[in-house]
Length: 187
Image (cartoon, rainbow, N blue to C red):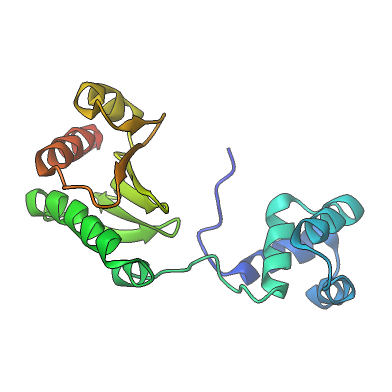
């Protein structure tokens, strides 16, 4: 199993690119400048097919050259909320407040550019935003499966369930799910 780079800076891939391909980054920047007017998928294909780049290395180089120096978009929950409309902001605040009011030691962090609650180094609960709904993740497929009877009326996927953006936050459901997930985490 591959583990993603812990450093969100795209340049963190550069030493590995230089080592694998035996050429300095200046060479790869020159290559990218020659194809700078190409579309993203064409640039990725060029690096993979002509130079043997992995998807991760190609993506890091292409996005860096396109001006995206970091994979991290948000550093805080407030930064995550800022571009959202007030309805989504209030619903998300309510979701995380419902859980942290019962489990105050849970830390609200940004991981994978999404708000997540973490306790004892393990993720407990997360959320993401779509145009017409919010996607909630109790992190554990076992927890989600156990709560399926209480999720009737919601769209339930393999690892998540969806709620409307203006959801009247069900504190009891969220707290019970968080309690079940926390019970899975070693002490």
